[in-house]
Image (tube, rainbow, N blue to C red):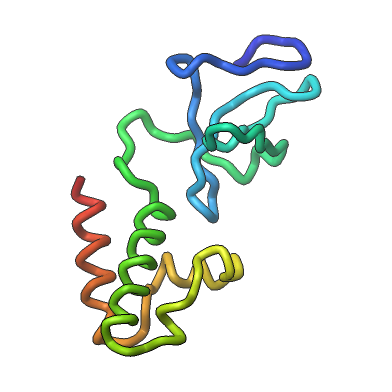
Length: 130
């Protein structure tokens, strides 16, 4: 529970962290406009939502990297591999240009081509083991 009032921003050591059900974004509980909200854990942005049902409380012992962070590293590595393989169109893709549906598919399945799937798996295995 957070204190009453219109606005509350907890100190870093007092934050209660949450993860988004779909995107694995990390956020913490705040009070905005007199209501509880989740503020995304993004420095310099006051990006918050009142849709608390889309967020799950994060366990104290969580992985070092979120599924989203791992997927973004895998995506960038795949772009460089595509460049090395001469797949110019695929090497020019950008994470921000993908739809949410495409990002979720990437997080879940990665690239379909066997020549690229090994790198995706290796990076995922390594980062999840950290």
